[in-house]
Amino acid sequence: MGGVNPAGRTSGHQAFRRTVLDALPVEDQTRALLGLAAMMRLASGQEDGCWQDAEGHPLDPATIVEQTRQQVLDHTLIRRIEDPRFNAPGLPANRRASLELDAPLTFRVRRRQLPLDLPEAWQVRELDGKLLEVTVPAGEMNVMLPEHRPAQVRAAGQLPSGFEPSQLYRSVHHPRGLSMAIFAASDCLGDSGLDWSSLSDRLDPDEVAVYAGNSIGQLDDEGWGGLLKSFASGKRATSKQMPLGYGQMPADFLNAYVLGSVGSTGAAMGACASFLYNLRLGVEDIRSGRCRVAIVGTADAPVTPEIIEGFRTMGALADDDSLRALDALELLTDADYQKSCRPFARNCGFTIAESSQFVMLMDDTLAMEVGAEVLGSVPEVFVNADGWKRSISAPGIGNYITLGKAASLVREMLGEQALRQRTFIHAHGTSTPKNRETESHVLDQVAQAYGIDSWPVVAVKSYVGHSQGSAAGDQLTSALGSFAHDLLPGIANLDAVADDVHAERLGLSRETRAFKADAAFLNAKGFGGNNATGVLLSPDVTERLLVQRHGEAAVAAWRVRREATRETAAAYRQQADQGRFTPRYRFGEGVLEGPELSISDAEIQIPGYARPVSLAVDNPFGKLEE
Image (cartoon, rainbow, N blue to C red):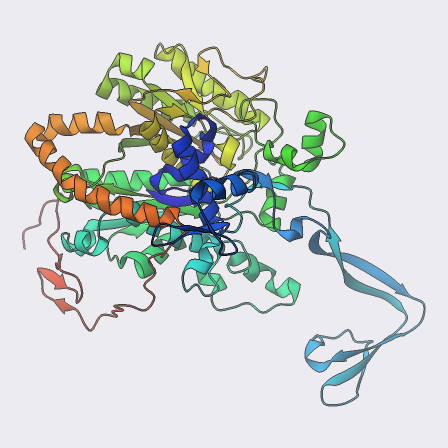
């Protein structure tokens, strides 16, 4: 797994550790804080193992942690938006106005700035080759007046301050989400401990699949956001904004610049369930035998004025006025913004966030052959729509079906007691009043149906916010952290469970809890009725299933091969913890356009790929006689 969100880097469970920091042993706390300080450019580790502060002064790790601890805590997770546009003087905007001119207005303007289509009454006189004088007659004149509007939403889950993925490789006008995807996929490859070239050489080129996207495309200025504003803002559209804005572009970037993959690709969009939709595609491809490795993920960077304003006008976000009213406050402080997201408590809206998360899926036979580290396994992802609805954004009935099926599968695989006593739920947990009531009813009813008395519930959005299509990726990687540390993050800011929450059979806690889990349920409820629940099995359970399927001798041999993988992955994580990142980005390398291929009716040989693409296909349809 690999990625980045407001809690930090995904590999090595760094981001998870940030969410359970106070429950960790001192050694793990120090490692997490030191790695975040390096990521935020507050310190740096050297190849000889020594450390320096931001000014280059040598310091021991303990001193660096002591000096930077508060800054790390204050500038990770949910916090006041650090984009200066959201603070004084405010968000740049324009206001339409009609001016009543009592007398003619004369002004000078450069020739290239004058509109091509002038009002008939305007008089233009040339002063020189570049400068014109324009006279507007008295009367009404429609104009756009520039202004700065105070931001009405000032809280968001942002990547750790000082970390800019676009600065780590040769990015050229890449939208932020795509830069995050490059980093996240590279982090995933590094965390795997496997050499990608060697791994891909073992496979037919089309036995690798990439399913990655996001929920709303790239809407910052480098993508569709800048494109759509170009005419109205008087700026020129660029040749990159249109193609780089597409929602499937994270997958395209991985194929073209990270993996060199020619296998199956695409993106499934399902609003807030998009990560699980893509996970489902990868799982189905592997189960059907269509591929053996699937890279699955999402990348969302929606902390922009326009997207925030869109959600705010829907009444979906925790804006400043609502937060003040909720807590009866005159002014909001940084501490108030940090607790803006309150799943299952008294709340007023979700907190938007940015995140990119990727996982590498592999069929079990290949994983054992290459000595892969097994963090867990995904037997199934269930997806169901809501049926008839009044409001397209309101929740409906589909989530009862997805979670019910997921619970049924775990009971069939692991047994009644495992389901009831050794599973937990990563709730969608958006922090809206509607979600706290409706999702808790889903969870509570399924718990009742399966005889579960106190189902532990985690809501990671209380730490990292709602990253839209990447939200379930945040949940999945957090759940893998729970398997590794036997800890469930508490629901931050849960001072008291709201009165309308159906909590009779749910374990809702503010405190981090020790818990040994066999399985986790990843729940997502997206606008439009896009419901998904993924089942995630722990590495211990997965190993038991591997023994059952392949035998103890094969599993023992895999464990031996895994040692080398673990050493390589540990070396990568050590470099990453020291703030030394080298994202995999192969622009313009090995480019092929077709004439280089060797094609027969049985296979296609691609230069640079160890094995050919077989053209043999399954035909379940029968054959007509010639």
